[in-house]
Image (cartoon, rainbow, N blue to C red):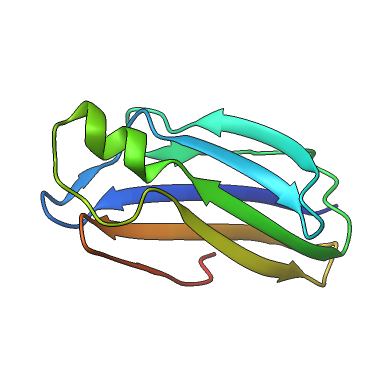
Length: 108
């Protein structure tokens, strides 16, 4: 059984990005799930705890999040495509965010 989580960190302040909307879609754009980061900037489980093998996309609504804080920004959203190949593993996709840059990696 495979599951998915995410964590968003504001790299400027070093604080969690609480209250950010995130959607999970299949590679052909079908929305599977959505959620909002908690006070620690996390969504501990997004989508089914039975994620099938395939390619997915997490989209983070960074534009609204920065806009609500009146922070000038360049990216209205960040979309991260990833491949889930082992259905027995947990997948964690972190996002390190600033108004003009972002990075991600495969977490654990």
